[in-house]
Amino acid sequence: MEGANQTEVTEFILMGFSASPELQWILFVMFLIIYLLTIATNTSIIVIVRSCPSLHCPMYVLLSNLSFLEIWYTSVTVPKLLAGLLPGNRSISVRGCIAQMFFFFSMGSTEFFLLAVMAYDRYLAICHPLCYSTIMCNIFCLKLSVVAWMSGFLASSVLTVFVSRLSFCGPNEIDHFFCDFVPLAKLSCSDTHLSKLVCFTLTCTVAGTSFLLTIGSYSCVIWTAWRMPSESGLQKALTTCGAHIAVTGIFYGSALSMYARPPVMESSNMDKVVSLFYCVLTPLLNPIIYTLRNNMVKEALRKSVTTSGLFRV
Image 1 (cartoon, rainbow, N blue to C red):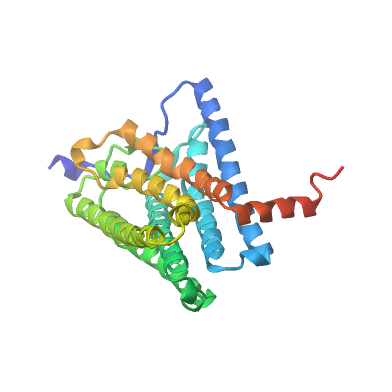
Image 2 (image 1 turned 180 degrees about the horizontal axis):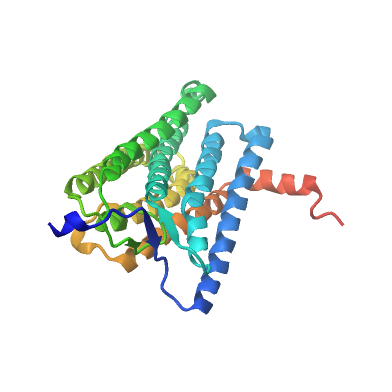
């Protein structure tokens, strides 16, 4: 009966990071630099792929697609993180909070599917090189990208429907720097068992499906390379796919440690650290890893810089 007298909250307070004002300014500058570098590097990859005719193939179209996704993925959370580190209002409306969660899960789910599509692309290129251009044509690549985006938004929509039905009667302080599902569910005065089950099921379905496709693709790649007459076959295949394997491992490891774990392992401080990794650092690491491990991208970048005259005396 006590809950009947409670007033449903209309806004939340994002607590962010509890630190001294001096440390918060340092964090603000650091995260701002990372955010600007993330936007700049991912935008550079998109521009390079679109402007270089030799990169107009499915592998690099998917890479630019991933870079486009990373720009929006990090922009969903980091601006609010930066605002929370400045003196002022840390509030966000309930609808705005749910909307942020929706776009965050949409981008995250889409990234799972895009990484699986990129693994499938490498599988076709290495295991079936003679029919690669016939199967992985630009139209088919476009269709796979559209399916990845639609599947990601659809999965997030299902979770958002359940979260939007929850009631929040106070307290209204979210112990996080953005509206994630776990800290948001803790504040609900409704029964959250079904919502938590839906979140866990969707995470395992999205991540599990894409993980199996990725593992299956690379298992075939390694097996095919292992059977190549040349001793350098395996090394060449791993070099070609090394960047994608690294990016996939980083993203899967951080995301699954956050959403596919037992409730007894939940920790607010650990959640913030893990969230920082896949919200802030991973979108910056992805284009750097791909650029450093890909000679064609580095060559296109060198030509674009030389053509622009940045290093002319």
